[in-house]
Image 1 (cartoon, rainbow, N blue to C red):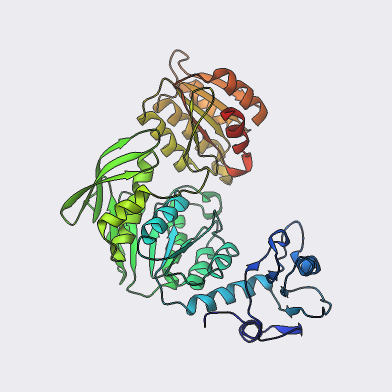
Image 2: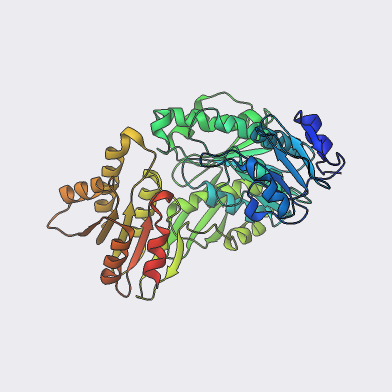
Length: 459
C-alpha cells in the first residue's frame, strides 16, 4: 500500500496524537480551509499574514477528518483525528519524501531562470504519451508547493516537478525531497541576482538540483547557454549530460525555425535524423523548452512520433505567451505571469519575428532585481528599440527607466510612447491605441497584476 497513515506521521515526524485513530489514512491533504471537503486532511501552515494552525476547527467544520497542526494547543474533537507536530512545514516535507520513496517511477525535476513552467508542461505532455503523469500545478515550486504536489501521488506512473529558488540552499531542500531520476536546467539568467550576486552564483544554486539524484543520473542542459556550456565542458561529473541547442553542436538540435503568432515550427535533428515539430506557442525561447522536453522523452524511451505528438498537443499553464484575439482585432500575447530581463528580451525578440501591422509592448516593472533595477530596465529599453517596437506602454516606477533608455536611443521619435501611472490608465490608452492587425505583448512581474490589463483590452 502507498497510503500515508496517521501512525506514519507519528513515527516519521515525531508527532503526538491528540485524539483519534492512528490507523486512519490521510487523504487529500490541503493547507487552505477554502478547499477542504468531507474526509480531507488539513495541515496548518503559519504564513506571513495569518496562522493556518488556528483555523483547524474551521477545517473540521468543513469536513476534515484529520488535522496536522503545530504551535498551538489543540482541543480534542470526537470522531476526528488531530496530530500535534513541532513544525508543520517540516512535517509536510518529511511526509512528501516518504511518499516519494514508495514509488519506483520516473521523476523529472525542472529548473532554470526562465521557462520552467512551460518546460514542465511540455515534459509532462510528452511523458503522458507513455505514463499517467502528475505534474506541479501552476507555480507550486517552493518548499511548500513541491511537497504538496508529491503528496498527491496515487496511481501515477511518472512525476514532473518544477523547482524554483531565490537563495542558496532552497533547491537543495527540494531535490532531497523529490529525489529525481532525471534533471533539466533550462538556462542561467538574472532572476534573483539581487540575492545571489552573480550569474555564476545562480548557476551554483541551480546545480544543487543534482544533490538529490543518483551520481550517474542524466541531466539535460541548454548547450547554447554560456555558463551551462562551460560547466559541461570543464566540470568532471559522473552524471550523464545530454545537451540541446540551436547554435552550438548538441545531442538534440533545432533548425529552420519559423515563428507565427500562435505556433512555431522547426526541424528537429537527433540521432542523424530529421523531423518536423510544431509547438502551439510562438517564440524561439519556447523552441529551447521543446528541445529540453524532447531530451527527457528520448531518455525515457518514448518513441519520437509520440514525443512530437505530445509537443503539439501540450496544455500550457495560463498567462505564458497565451494568444488571445481581442475585440479590437489585435492579437494579444498574454505573458503576464512573471518577468525577468531574460524573459522580456525573449518575448520582445518573438514580437519582432512575427508579421503584424504594428508591434505593441505593454510592459511593467520586473521585481526582485534589487540594485540591478535601473540597469536591467534600461536593457529592456534597448531591446524595445532593437526589436523595432512601434508602440510602448509602461506601468510602474522602475519601468520609467525603460522609457528613458528608449527616448535616448530611438531615432526621429519613431516609437509611440505612453507612460502610465496605473493599470486602469494603461487599459484606456491601449483601447484607444490598438487597431486591427496589431499584435500586443503584455508582460510584467506577477505582482503588477497585468492580467487586469489583458482582461481590460480583450473586451
